[in-house]
Amino acid sequence: MKTDDVLVAAVGTAAFAVAFVVLLLVPLDPADRWWRWVCVTGFAMGAFGCWYIPRLQKGRADAAARRTAH
Image 1 (cartoon, one colour):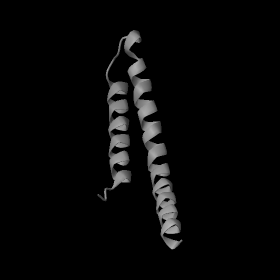
Image 2 (tube, rainbow, N blue to C red; image 1 turned 90 degrees about the vertical axis):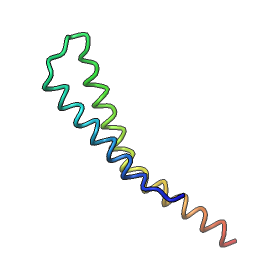
Image 3 (spheres, rainbow, N blue to C red; image 1 turned 135 degrees about the vertical axis):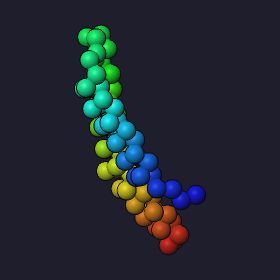
Image 4 (spheres, rainbow, N blue to C red; image 1 turned 45 degrees about the vertical axis):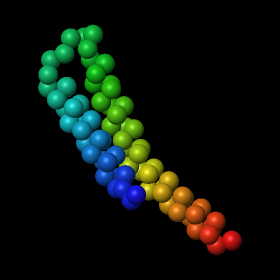
């Protein structure tokens, strides 16, 4: 099944960015400020996924092409 994995990662990344902005606007107790770091980490992982997924898919396609060429 063909899917647009980069789009899925980009939507998740955008959701973490929006959540981070909301958490910046909402006053939080000092004990709950770790939720901001959850958003930062989610955004960073999503951005890495958007960068990495096309390279992963290209590598898999190249490997499959090499297997079928032999």
